[in-house]
Image (cartoon, protein in one colour):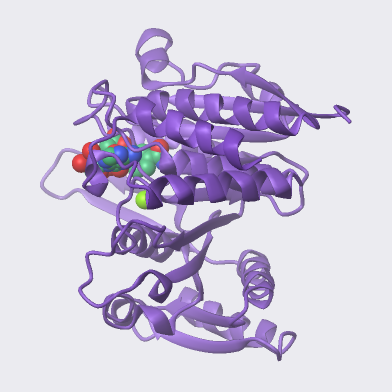
Amino acid sequence: NGACRYKIASIPGDGIGIEVVEQTIKVLRAIEAVFNSFTLDIDTLDWSSKRYLEKGEYIPADGWQRLKASDAILFGAVGSPEVPDDVSLWNLILPLRKKLNQYINLRPIRILPGLSSPLKNCANGDLDWVIVRENSEGEYAGQGGTTHDDTPNTIANEVAVFTRVGIERTMRFAFEVARERPRRKLTMVTKSNAQRYGMVLWDKIFYEVAKEYPDVETDKMLVDAMAVRMVLKPNTLDTIVATNLHGDILSDLAAALAGSIGVASSSSLDPTRQNPSLFEPIHGSAPDIAGLGIANPVGTFWSAAEMLRWLGECAAADLLLRAIETVTANGAKTKDLGGMYNLAQVTEAVIVEVKRSF
Ligand code: NAI
Ligand code: MG
C-alpha cells in the first residue's frame, strides 16, 4: 500500500563497515522495489573514527534526537588503528546500546547452505543456535577505576554489575525465544562455581523464570565446559542465554564454527520498543582487508533481514534470508569462505536472486 514508511539511521562507521553497509543498502533498495509495499527513509550518519579524529567526537550534539526519531539503526563497525579500541567502543557502539536501552543482544547462527563448519563431523543441520546475550550490564557495566596510575603500584578494578531487573528481563526474553523454536530448549551459561555473587544470582533467577515456562527444556553449563560442548556436541544445543562477556566470546566462537565471522549477525534490541533497535554484523572494521573490496557482506545482509523482521516486514525478511542462502549454496562466496567473489559480486548475486524469487 506504500503507506508504511520506516526511518532507518545508517551508521557505516569505519573500515569494512563502510563497504558492507553500502552494499546492504543496495540490497534493501532491491527488496523495497520488489515488494513496493513499504518505504525505507535511510538517513546516513558519518559517525566514525574519521569524524572523531577531525572533530573530537563520534556522536554529534543532535545525534540522540536523530536516532530517537528513527525506527531502526543499521550499523557497520567501529574501530581504527589510529584510535585506541576502548575509545572507539566506549564513544560509539556502547553508548548506543546503553542509552537506547538495548538490553538484549540476539545472535542467530547456523551453517548456511554451501558453507561448511571447520569442525570435521558437523553437517549443516548440526549447528543451529540462537544466542541471547545480556547487553546492558554484567562485566561491561563500565564501573571501575584506577589509582596510582603510571606507577609500579597501579591498581585497576573492573566491576561486574548484575541486577535482578537486568537478569530477569534477559531470562524472560530467552525463554520466549526458546519457546518459539521447534526444540524448545534453553541452555544457560554461567560461572557460578568461581563467581559467587553475580553469577549465583544469575542462576537463581534463571530457575525462577523457568517455572513460568514448563514447556521449555532447561540446562545449565559452566562457560568453560560450554566452549568444549559447542565444539564437540554442537547438535545438543539450541537456544543459549549468557552474560554480556560470555555471550560476546561464545558468539564469536559460534560464528567461526558456522563457517566465518563474516556471515553472522547481531541485533541489539530494546524489547520495550521505546527506542530504535540496532542491527549489525558481529565482525569489526577489519583494517587488514579494508578498502580491498573483498569483505564478506553476508553478515550485514543477514542483519538487514533481522531488521526487517523487527520492523514487522516478515515476508521481506524471509525473502532476503532465502536469497542469501541460495547465493551461498550456489557458491557465490567471498575469500573468507573459500570463494572467489568480491563484495560487489556477492551483492549483485543476492539482488538478482531477490528479483528472481519474488
Ligand atoms: P574483526 O572482526 O574486524 O577482524 C577479525 C578477522 O576477521 C580479520 O582478519 C578480518 O579480516 C576478518 N574479517 C572480519 N570481518 C570480515 C568480513 N566481513 N569478511 C571477511 N573477513 C572478515 O576484529 P578485530 O581485528 O579484532 O578488530 C578490528 C577493529 O574492529 C578493532 O578496532 C575492534 O575494536 C573493532 N571491532 C568493532 C566491533 C563493532 O563495531 N561492533 C566488533 C569487533 C571489533
Ligand atoms: Mg565480539
